[in-house]
Length: 137
Image 1 (cartoon, rainbow, N blue to C red):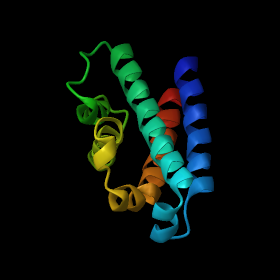
Image 2: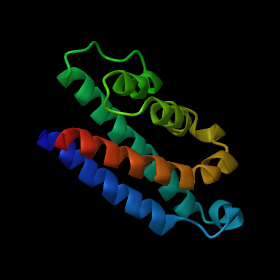
Image 3: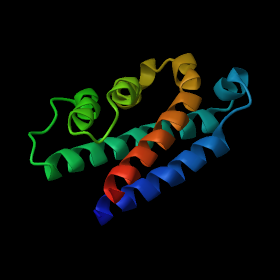
């Protein structure tokens, strides 16, 4: 078992727990509490960044060429039999949120980030389970 990947999964789990802790009760709570909003944005970015690191590590371990982009890295894991193809197609667009948070900070749409809090949590809990399952097979 790859201990670097396991360490990253443990860190991802910590961030997912933090995402739940910071989760606002509603949209107004999200936009009116700047510290909570910034914390959520950063935690979402970190969760996705860890997944991208894991994706690239698994692709490299398989001897395959790196994925062309972040989105493609999830699909490549499906090609390798690590993720289910439907799930890979569902989770891959989360890289768009990450890119907006990193590169277009002043233009981040609060509603989109807020609407993706639960989705990010659900997708990445499932992602962790799939990666753990793969590592233990």
